[in-house]
Length: 141
Image 1 (tube, one colour):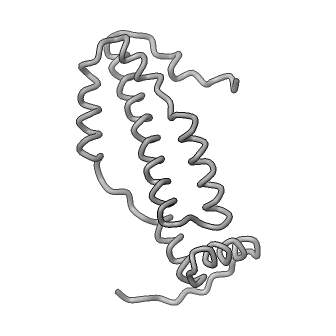
Image 2 (cartoon, one colour):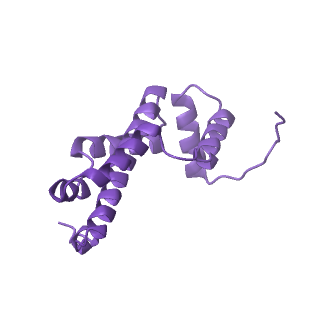
């Protein structure tokens, strides 16, 4: 793999955050910036995991009442709160390897919930139900 030297002018605040993250992970600043850039530019893997594909395929067999419940699924409050905490920590000082894995798991949970909700809504609509209440913006309360 060839390596290219790049000169990059960073705002002071961004540079300080990079220094803090590098120090927290006991890395060189250059290594930390390379890691962050690699994560930001990573291409998503194509397709869904087989287990999730199977779970989504099973949604079509649910009765209407179960579909309505599935269409209203949300990420548990504790998981959402933990994700917020880790996102803030990542911005400030970076994450440990275990915390980075936890973030990926939490994002996977959020993706799973979103996909199940969407599939359930599609099935309800296909069955002639009015799903506008599922897609209407909340009142913020």
